[in-house]
Amino acid sequence: MDLTIAVNGVELRLGDPVRPDDLSKAGLGKVPRWKRLLRGQSGTDQWWRADDPRVICFDGSVEIYPCQHGYLDPDRRWGTGCLVATSNGRVDRVEIRVIDGKYAAGNIFGRFVDAGCQLLGEPESRFDGEAVWRPNGWHVDAIMEPDAVNVAFHLQVATD
Image 1 (cartoon, helix red, strand yellow):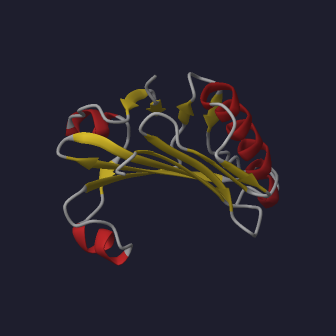
Image 2 (cartoon, one colour):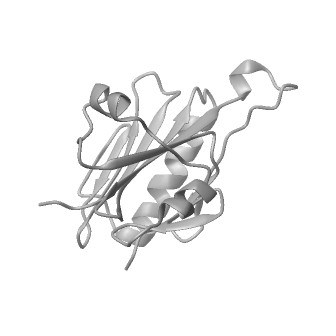
């Protein structure tokens, strides 16, 4: 099994080589070293970031997209974010976020967890607002922040 994530229509596979051109085509821009260090990210990895991308994962079962339509009330809008870490030219980690999604965060979190259960099996741990899988060399988790309007999804190659 491989974990494939499409960012703005460009497929990225965890553990596979990726070219900087492909990351740029996905709308990802390189995160400056000083910002990586502020976030506590490894100095050897390259980090790429996109604001408000459309991300598809779990074989198309989950689509995470922004909704910023001006005609909607502010509590019905939400943003998305995506960080991709590469190490030695390979996709090592992908972090996807739903930002300020008062109504969307719970819905997208539920769809991610349901799709994860179908494709990865039951989570290793699951409790209110969090699900964690550790299948075949991958680490996958979904975390609903306590405010219930922000969600983070992490998919990465296992290092242990």
